[in-house]
Image 1: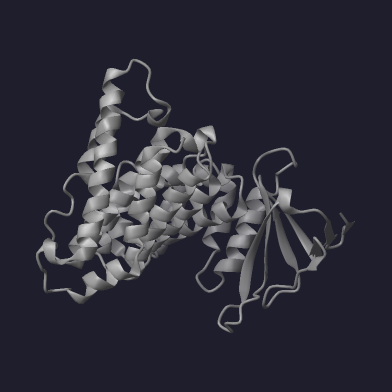
Image 2 (image 1 turned 120 degrees about the vertical axis):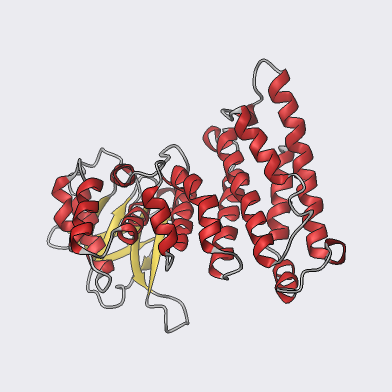
Length: 358
């Protein structure tokens, strides 16, 4: 039987993702009207009220049953109440599109928190919960990129739970990657969010480094590295202080990190992560990277990424990934990242550089 929250979250995501909803509200920027005159907001309010009712029913069971239901796996009572409050009457009053975006972000934020805490992501119920969580985070990223809300205000709402999601090794890799994408969106061109994240007690750059080192996926490691690079100060002395603290338990990587530049970010990060993972013995869970001159899989031949004459092939925990020449018609897109699950590979032919065939 489908969980009642699942349908409610799907409906919430669909309404918020509706171009009609966002466009209707953008047209009224600076000219707020009563909510009764907005079909989009009224529809959204209905969905939120439905979600709120389901949460309240679940909370009643949470307190009165000795054994917690499966979908309240490890949720603290105060967190559950806070989640309910975020949905309660959230759109009864609003001022403009920025206000709506702020409130919608708060709901999406708690949607993800509830899904993570209910335990189904760990218990392998199905992929629906993961998809809903990823879709919710992607919506927050869309709000940021379209400039519909104050990036600093939204950052204060979201950065703490996003960091917690990114560094939680028990969560699905794609969910952690999406969290990192949203964090990077918050940090892009926003000094206030960088300052907020760097000064908060909940954030320690060394924890982010530890999470990166133990990540079982190259792209996930790269996401961590991009956040660290954005947070690293530009002034040389401050930069060294930040890096020495962040890499306190991995001092051999300090100089390699300091060589990464904006102009050579791809090459610098590739060299850094290859060095970080070179101790992989084939048994540990960190990625193993090989350099190849030719790749074929399932009879498909791959072509070098733009500007390179070799492939870096990353063997992750669940997938193989590499960068290839873009197959997009858009000339502005040079390269694509190809990620293939091991279960989807029937034949594989990899010509290693200077090491023969694998």
